[in-house]
Length: 504
Image (cartoon, rainbow, N blue to C red; front, side):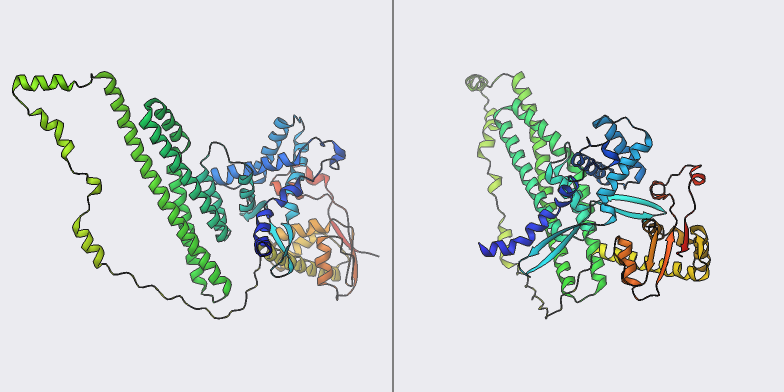
């Protein structure tokens, strides 16, 4: 018992990880938002609705989502499901608030647990919404953990379970979670086995009652067989993704322990997918044969209702009167035919005896290797943000040495001249000044209270720098308008210029 508790704990925590963001999000209350005007909104219902929206767009329609599409969906949901008749600006405020909570302000949800094997605490990270920037546009998609969480709560109606599981498998392969993909294939095999049993039940019903059998057959076609073409297409797509992952790992030519572990996981996933494709092909063939047998049974039932039964006494009298027994050949020939199902060709025995077994390959022994430190994607992203923020702050401090007061536009023009106009399109350049506007006064150099994410970076990086205090004049931030890719033509006249100056 004690061994089970210790060895199974890590896997159980990984399974619980995908539920953690949901229960953290449902604690979010709308009572403190806009003076409690939207307290009737239920965060749990909204989260599940947004997950279903992203699954529909990302997986079923095979496209990513831009923010205006999400805004349109949330506005319709608030109007239809909560009877909220608001202005476009009010819908947008609520949608922005919900989206920021789903993204966790751009950082992954962290699930801390204790590892009894190594006797130390571990941190598992998960995101619900993932984003990427292409051609100056932010595209959003749902993560594989969020899909798995949604599927665990309830199956999607009117969709093939095999197809939905394969969409999850595709996400896991793209996220390089090959071990989790093997578990998904196990669920696919369970569903194939269920369909196989269902097919056998339909055949048994057809043999006993043709009318009940036809009803069972039509139900099976509408709930199982109609998805076979789509399932075969997804099988081939995932097979190509696995092959691409295998070739990508072969090109690395690493000798680390994690490399060999990943290669083994890909190899095991590939084998399990081949087994699943084989079983699915057998099910497809069996269903095709069942369709032919059903058609034949229907034809026989129709003919049986139209023609009279054979009277062997009358048939015998006719043969005696005519003196012709040729009809007996047609009647008795099937009774004397050999049972072909038990026939086995004798040459096949000699061939089986002469086949030499394939020699087993010797397993390669790997020597002791140091464990490679795993770097997560969000850690790489945090490192990139820290480097970019430090770079911008160094230029900002250099600008104060030349001028004690300047605007954001003047600073942007100077950066464009020194480096490139493309620097103004960098997302970190934009987010740096958004974070900077959270406070009106900064002191660089020495140890300052770490009140925000930006303060942590600046304090750690410029602790030994010459002490300087500067102020940021309050200005209206354009974060939401920039994220939507939309802005009003008159808004620039109402907004003041952002100003930086040395504190007296």
